[in-house]
Amino acid sequence: MSFSIEFEDGITNGASWYPIYGGMQDWNYIHGGCFELTLEISDNKWPRASELPTIWEYNRKSMLNLVASLVKTGVHGRIFSLDQGKPLPGLVVVKGINYTVKAHQAYADYHRLLEPGKIYEVTASSPGYKPKTTTVWLGENAVTADFILIPEASYGGKLLRSSCDCSYGQPLLLTRFFTETNNGITFALVVVVAFLFFLLQKRVRSNLWKQRQSSRRSTTV
Image (cartoon, rainbow, N blue to C red):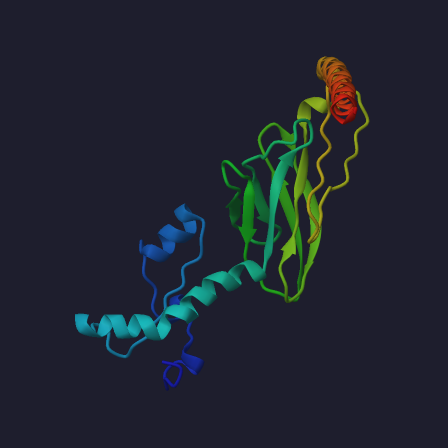
């Protein structure tokens, strides 16, 4: 197909070729939250069943490399809450593009494929939290943008940091806030551990003293 006379380098935009409505492209993009890519790997649209294993082996590595290469471009990251540090299944929107990316329900990770060499304004939001926006310059490599959202209830007369807490290619550092109850439990555990260590040390010293006495007795002529 790369030598096709009709399509330059074997590539075409599906909508400019012929439009269809209600197909897999629409379902994947609108309901599945993913992009549709159709690969025409043979001039014969209906090859024989006996030819399928050979076609698969010819294209297997390149197809797997294509999927693996998607994480090397675009904007990726996670969304967290400031108060508890828990993942938030929020939404990510790029300014100027009428499409919303949904973060994972459990891990809150999102992945947005974008054209490299441009500057994008990325906004993350979640119900009950104040949205945050950051500007991303996307080069040839992928960019990691993690968001920490502030609960709307935290704005009751308190001055909080409003800048976007985003990291690019660096692990996200979360600060956990412990209540007085947790501090009390931690202190009690420290006391118990220290007491057990004291008893263990005392027992070890006693055993060493007994061994020395036994050794002396055994070597006495």
